[in-house]
Image (cartoon, rainbow, N blue to C red):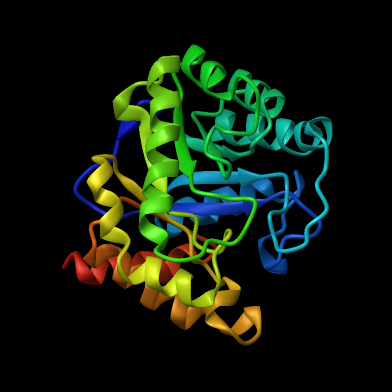
Length: 259
């Protein structure tokens, strides 16, 4: 897969989470423009290959903020990171206005938790900037029955939107949406069988970092997160989106025999 000027293949890479929100579920991940460069530098040193900036919380029962507020939160930090570091940056948004602002400010990728189905013209904007996209499965109601045909159909439909809009095949990755429209058992079913999404023929991204599926306090969810990263490596997932870059990188390096 290509993001910005870099190609990612034959490994499991770290996407480091940088939250620019006051209400993200994992408090230590909340950052501001005052510590953004230090945060980015540390993540890069610890092994992040991509940074993912989020200016809208998607925690359960979150209160949505406007595209204007998203842009206000991420625009300056994004420009600061891109001016300082040679690393691809993704912006997590489902608003087309925010995507336009992010890409015009130097973002290389849009991470859309609604898989190009909510923001009007989202796919066309991404294509116009020759940018990359992560298409995530989501639904308005919790899934019932066999989850895989439903997830795969959503992703297939969204890929068709992307391709028809001119997004390059080598700039698309897919996310099964663990924690979105799925109960705890379904989240684990998806995690343990994530490779089923490979049938789409596109690289995969997974996001399990410190999520409620692991139970207990968010501060105590690092160990199960690392176990889920190992499961992702076993299944050939291209990206793991995580808060704790160093610890996850160590797991990946060990499994690939690089340490």
